[in-house]
Image (cartoon, rainbow, N blue to C red):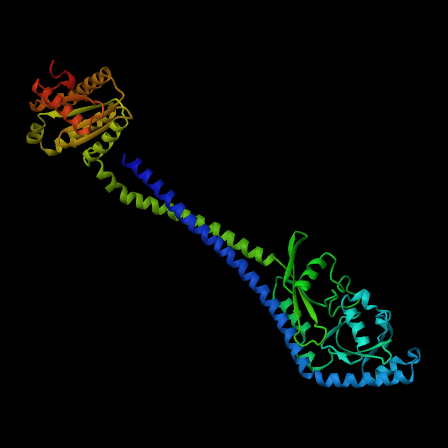
Length: 494
């Protein structure tokens, strides 16, 4: 009985402790996952912010040194305007020689916004309306504007090189003379080399596939002609690129490449120092989720191992705790000598049976002349006799019956759904079996030990105490009638 109680207690401890630990573990697990995602996101944010900050720094430095370059380019533009006034035939100009003299590339743009002459051969035939969207309107405004204009830092579309561009319209407004000066050869670029910074970030952060800088038209800065597919933004990414540019907000798109999750993030940056045409650059960061997925897998495996360890620890602790506390809990409701339920347990179980409105009967058993055993043979012999009685009672009752020791030599049995014939058979069996135990004891020591039994059936809505009292009265009547017999409460008047 103690063994089963301990088992039930251990199982209960394991169940509730596991539920508690698993709930806490799952909450911590999802918190940890959320933190890993946040750290990964923060890392990518740091990279993007670093590139944007580098763009800002280089723009700031070019703005500080821009006045000298502007004056130089304005002087060269005025020189070319005077040359045009004296010699309208551009086809007779030696543009390569002029480039050597001025130290700048020269472009002649006509009314169709097309480069018709240039020292930079790759740009001949370039039409701004076809390549550059709204910038063609700016070109047209500058041709008709009649004044010198310049930008800070822009893209040489055919080479991806960083350059400073300046514009001066001819006096007849038929052409726009454009000058370009490479910014990648000066000390400012060497000090604040944005492309070097991007390369360092690619190398430093494992998830990064590539970092690129794009012109608003979708043309990449610093590409080479032999890099297939790197000059223009891909058509697949063009919509998200355009959305980031249009809303001036960060956008990203994720896709699967050979089973690997790749994310394309686009970060727009608009310089604060552009003049009549604010220049936006788009930073593209391409990164994978391999490291993130690896961290999540490692964290997931750690969580599983943790739960296994917790499970083992809970089982061990539950067994130990169950063993420690099961005995005092068991003794609170059981007789320490016989192992039967005690009076407290009897009252709880009996009241519960009566509330179920079952046909409940109560059998009270008392050992006749038990004092003779204790007085003549000692209390140890008396205890052994009580244990034998308890064992015999447990042996002959049904699984649903409840046997209890009230203390001393008094025992009770609560039965359900048994008629009078069944209770009679059980009483006679107990008398027969117990008398067998007493026979040798009485013969050897000249004792007169037997048992008396009182039986009562519960009435409708009867309390346990009333039922007990009637069974006790029947027991008393059995003793008065000569002991070693049983009497039903309803037969006492007969």
